[in-house]
Image 1 (cartoon, rainbow, N blue to C red):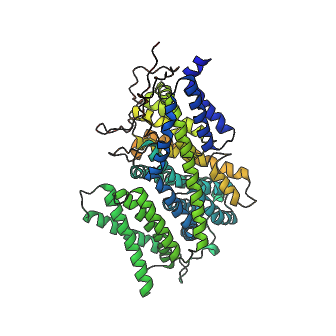
Image 2 (cartoon, rainbow, N blue to C red):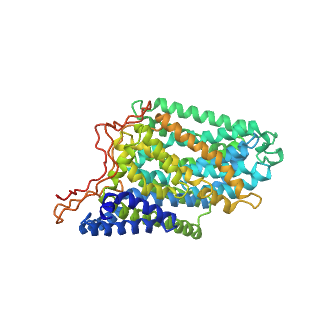
Image 3 (tube, rainbow, N blue to C red):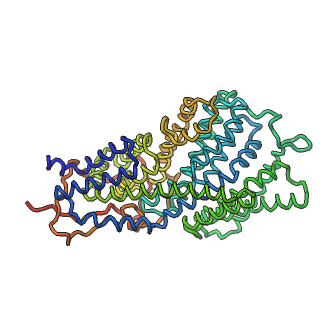
Length: 573
């Protein structure tokens, strides 16, 4: 029995963690308790030296020294201030009027505003609750299909998981030892593609069943010119002029500058031009722009300016993600102050919610550190590596298995739990197979996005249920989410088949992974402990090549973070 435990300690430890999680025990304490329990068992069996637990204090201090995690409270606070200051309400009202005259216009507006809120808040709960309170009653009033309406709102809120400044991207960058800025760049295009796919689904529904998403009736279109026209033509003209200004600035800017820097400068110039033109038109009463064009400009420009301030400075390299988050939090306070909606009560609510989320993340991270210390001590990382690299198909087989595993576990775990438990285990294996970790992180982020949409435990569905009218049944919300979960899975497949969707480039490895302080020299720890013999044989001749897929490879010149190795030796018989 003892030899069986020693030989299979890693899989037994992992299985016991699953039992802990399924029992409903809080995840942070389940991780820590599991790690300490098996540490004591390993010490008793002679597998681990007692000195191993002396590494715990340094690992916990390492969490406090990790400045990357500071971006989480900054971006959370920014999102909560913006959500409580009424930005979502203004956006939904204005964009709804803009798209209202076409079939599915309110659904398009919800998706567009969901993407915009994702780029400014990064918080799923804030987006779903805001759009559920404002848009869902309106969509039901104008006879939208209940399933389509609820599915669009729930799915649009989850865009905050993949569009920067997403919290999950910060956590994944930290766990994979990569720059948050590089992770943001890599996720930008997939986030936009996913938004377009949501809109494509709405278009398909309106073509097949027009009654499911009717246009707004004329009496509901409040933005009218004295002539009776909607003023949408003026919006198109202003957009075209702004794009022309942006293209002109790009042509005049340094041609040798990186693409992301030129993009930020040109987009910033276009936004500034539109805002200045609208201000001059209103101040001098030139009547060059319609009422709708003015309203759209003054409602859209503030959040777009905040996006430019935060993401633009990060992409160009002027600010780190932590500094960008600090600027975003300050910018959100300024916007709320300008709208005269900033008061002590709002600030206190936002700070309390930020404190709760930050404490939640830190406690899970502490538990994960305790668990991973013991798990790596019993060579659990080697067991996982052999288990995954032994799969047939090389890179392709590994990616299919990991994505299926994450998808199934997302039924029961949220993205923080998946990121802190599984990513540190599969990340080194992906690195060894030659998969670019930025690309791999974005792929996992898109997959973990489904954790918010899974019936019956998806948090996005719970958020919507809490604010939905009684006429919307829970089954309507669940069935409405199914097509969007399928779209998210299609997006996962597209990233695998077309890896160029994720901008990887050359990026420097960051010493920020959860296991960065796991290497422990125990040469002076007394007698050498015996290491477990693994029951899963190492694969022979695995070169990590996919079958017909050319996935992004790691730059050969850079030193990549590998799985930490304990300097344990087996006892001589």
